[in-house]
Image 1 (cartoon, rainbow, N blue to C red):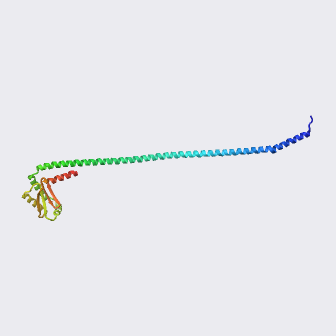
Image 2 (cartoon, one colour):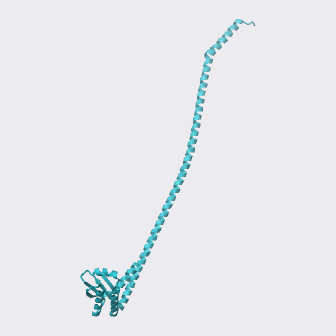
Length: 247
């Protein structure tokens, strides 16, 4: 077989032309397309890395917020426990104070009730004692006891302290009159005895009215204005009753 160099040269030229055409119109666009796809992939990867970094940052931020929230929640629980303990302490103190006040009120009410009962019992005992004494003295009262009490009245007037005389004289109202009450009618001698005793003690002549007052039971009562000197059984029983009521 004989080699045709012309044909061979033309084939070589055709091949080179084909390479140039492929490089010119096919290889470069393909390379450009590949470069664009590579650039797109790089952008996608960059965006993915950015998204991953953002997700990591958000996860870290969330973890931080979660940790902060756990701390805030723990602090809130501590504050709530402290506030609850404080409120419990305050409520217990208030309850203790209220119970103490209630005990004091109850004790005061009991004391008042007991004092009232004691006063009522004392008053009842005084009334019964006064009634008993009144009945007993009423049975013992008579002219003899009256005479003795009149005598004691004179002695009591004579022993009256000087500091009481000023009030007695002031009670005369300046009219020079007085009244002597007695449970029984006094004899002329008893009237004169009392008149002499009164005028001697007061140092002044008085006009005395003698009246009978059976409520006195026995004894006598001298009335000078607003002032009285009582030496009767009824008066003594009244003093006894007042002392018992105060007791």
